[in-house]
Amino acid sequence: MVLIKGLVIFILCTALLVQSEKDDWWKSATIYQIAPLSFKDTTGDGKGDIQGIISKLDYLVDTGIDVILLSPFFQSNMVDFAYDISNYIEVDSTFGTMKDVEELFTKAKAKGLKVILDFVPNHTSNKHEWFIKSEVETDGYKDFYIWHDGHKQINEGRNLPPNSWQSEYGGSSWTWSPMREAYYYHKFAKEQPDLNLGEELVIQKLNEVLKFWLDKGADGFRVDAVSQLFEDPAFLEVPDKANDLPQTYELIERWRKFLDDYSKNESKILIPQVWNAPIDDLMRYYVSEDGTPRAQVPMNFMLINELNKDSTASDYKRVIEKYLSSLPTGAIANWFLGSHDHNRVASRMGRDRIDGLMILLQTLPGISFTYYGDEIGMEDHMDISWDDTKDIQACNADKDSYQPLSRDVARTPFQWDKSENSGFTSGKSWLPVHPGYVENNLESQMSVNNSHYALFKELTKLRKNSTFAFGDIEIKALGNNTLAYARTYDQSSFLVVINLGNATEDVDASQFKVKLNERSKIRVAATNSKHEIGEIVNLSNLHLTPYDAIIIDYYSSATKVTLSLLAVMMIIVKIFL
Ligand code: NOJ
Image 1: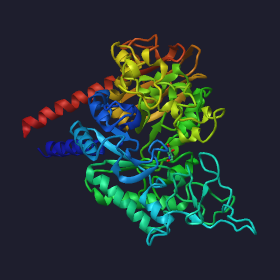
Image 2: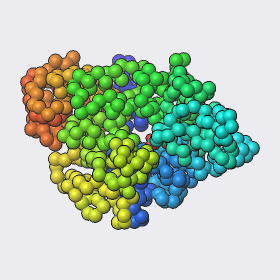
Image 3: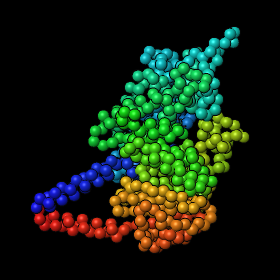
């Protein structure tokens, strides 16, 4: 009897442990980034809106998305894709009303979707009330932004800028205010003055913004431009360090505490946008040296920044292992292959690689971030004319040089179907729809079994499996272009094999630490694969056609025995209690 009770307690504890691991909703989440302006328009003004997102919630749930990450929809002067906010706690009329956003929260939550918002603390719009007050030195607002008198010129009128720092979008990052007779600093456009985050009152105001949206139901925040939050306080021409300054980590630590204090029972997550930091700096965003928690998920752009069309399987292995082996103990990995700031993955890496790369994104350990449209392999629209160009980074250039700078290419409307404007709007779309939408759209992909979308859906389902959610990883480069990794949890394993190259490769995939079953079956195959789902593969001689990608399911007989034993034990326990 004592033995049986002990067994019951053991089983219950194990179940609870697994449960608590699973309860932390974000740890293996499938996160989907929506740019509201380009997702779905319901008013006919050619711009996506909140009601458009609401109308697609069922689509998102059906696709297997757990969390939606919404790019800014707050009141904005619309200079930079709504990243120039003029009121953090109002909804811009382009997107709808506060009531619409409340409805979105309610409906998303009812469908089990978490909602993450974009928090932009580095800068506001120059139309924000705080800036307007700061420019005229209103009491309390004088130091809200980074003001500098500049360097006096003898006999020359206006002072010179404090230094030659350049803005991300071209030109000096200092703009002269004739009203205040001083320069203000802007890392981005001149219409986006940087807040002075060294000023306690500014932090307090920003905390009020966080609280406002937490009260509405936000489950966390992407934090925009974190690497750029602080500048060298001496404004040295060549500062010791330009990004990711020590104060940045302290502020993230504060915000983490703020969220943790706000919500004791359920995690609210912080996702700092860390642009291209050296790996040690990136890791510092997770936790301080003395163990104080910082962000749960500092964005990992390494698959974008460090790999390209020519990367070999060994390059992939190196990049993935470098990241994973640098993670602090217990930290959760995350992966990006696209965002509103990058060329689309299908264009950057080649259309033929889209399946293999989506398989990669969804089967690596941790959180996956999918940029809207990547689930159907949307591509960059490379022919947006100068007149149609909207991205400030491109607009700040000229007619002859704007194209390589433009992020509009990856911001075009979602390709829902083959009707006019791809079913995005009944009006004139704010950016031209990609001309390929007639062939490549969601509706057409949904009408066939073998499509990028069908594969994507299969992957989001599969990644809910504990092996992908919590399992270990062993990575190998099996050929010049064939990347393979085994994911293992308890006694269950999957083997992912991706040929990234345009040539056939025959590889030996039998040499993993986990001994794969001789009769392992294919669970998932890329749309162009010659392999069949359910096919039993010969691991020691695996034939991969160009860009082939498969997931092999290894459900060992050992696993089956363990599970059967467990079931028998449960029955015995029930009988005796
Ligand atoms: C980072 C955002 O990702 C980018 O799109 C934006 O232009 C800058 N922040 C400035 O707001």
